[in-house]
Image: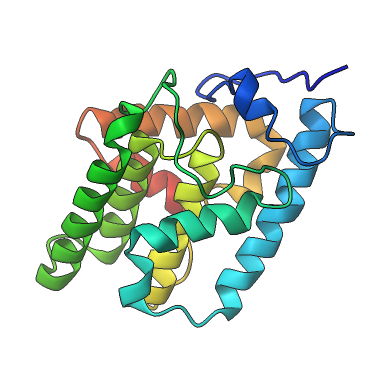
Length: 198
């Protein structure tokens, strides 16, 4: 009996090789996987709060990879490694390093030149990062934590709420999130900023 996964709209299916990277072989359901991932993510969030992160270290490929590894290393062997397969969303996998470098450079420019408000910089970073889709899985959660780290450690502001108080209506919240991402794809970043703040 292997790992049987069910995917919500907007989630990225794993291929068989990626599924084989599961470290805890006793996990067989989506629910169990979600629970183990959540425990791992909570450790990473806890670390990010107490790590005294330096702004110049955050906007690097190494940090982007290290954060993903921290979030998923207890569950996935490939945690922190760029994907090596095509997905239903995201750029061609061979372009990940190039596109990420471009995003990191753009973000440094926005910060240095005050191009956008701190919230908009963090959310624009999050949106482009999730669009690149660096990793086999966990890109949405990873990009949200990156945005929180940017807003808190670079700008000294409170982290985003991401509708966490409303997880009772998780399906409705997810639909709103996916809709705000699509609007950002079309150049309207405001709904995603509003979603993050509420």
